[in-house]
Length: 465
Image 1 (cartoon, rainbow, N blue to C red):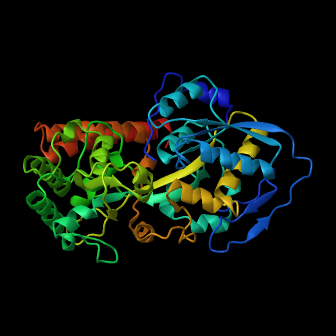
Image 2: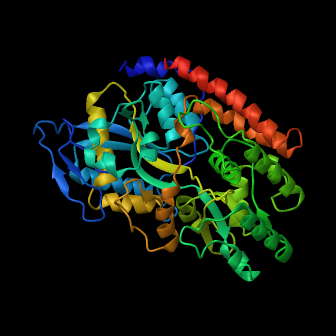
């Protein structure tokens, strides 16, 4: 791998575009590797030279990946570091918390100025982009064969570039829809939701009936949400349209856009008509995913389309109204099973040219993911599920039980496509065109596919593929 200075400085002036929000094998610097807490996993020990415990200092930048303790962001991370230092007193960890709003640009500046942190907890959208630019240290020596088999293929696809692992997968959750169950109970329409079905699958027609019931019986409640102001939360609108149209966002080999089908176009046309019919929130073209989420937390929206167990956990203290929220998959047509995009959170290491810092960073990642005590605590604090299929039953909550089952609906994630950072910028303007009546659904999806395919081809060429 080229030196980090050379790799990092190539990004000067480039804006990286981010996305939302496991046992280790032995390494030459790792004294112990443990299976993650849960399901009575056993500890395995690797031989390590006794003279490697030399003082080293690393910097950990973290988005709010863990829920705040006592209202203090970063308090839980400080507890992790304190516990980590009882095991590795020779490693000093400097924590810096960054926000989802300002963090991406702060990372851009740090990368461009050759001051990137050593380790970060983030999501595939940014991490894979950094990996493709040769900025990260590979983590394959941390992954045993057992772990490789225990993490679903869809999650490995979000953690690797070519045949190398650059993100250590920790927590996951399926992106689904959130439903204000209390609204449906109050209007006597709970039977219109698929909650009595083990897999909770439902059809587009059943979904329309549920929205119509809210419109007629709870006129002060908006039946459903949609948004198109920016790319934030675009995984929700992607999956929504793809499922309503029984389409895939990309083709099987990730070489072209596949969502521009007649049925997906018709689904987008229905959304525009739904705004007129007061089944979909008005002004969707000027709403962000955060705006729609806020309407849901206020109890003003019956069904939101960008939800997950992680968001549900984070929203417990943010609700501005009393109601019970539940999870359901996107409705589908033609008897198709839903296709859900997986959220994935994990850790990566910037190759800052210091082998000792890389080794120390791997120990921190191993501790956070796999320590017998803290591995389980950390997962619960994220509000997510384990990336490992064998780690289940972390929560005494039927919604988490269902979410674990819904992982069976995971589809290949668009985040791994070449040129993804540019591809996603073409999505929301086309949605806006439809909502503003300037294009039909099919016309907009065709235009998106044209621009996105060009970006994919260009990115492949630049990568020498």
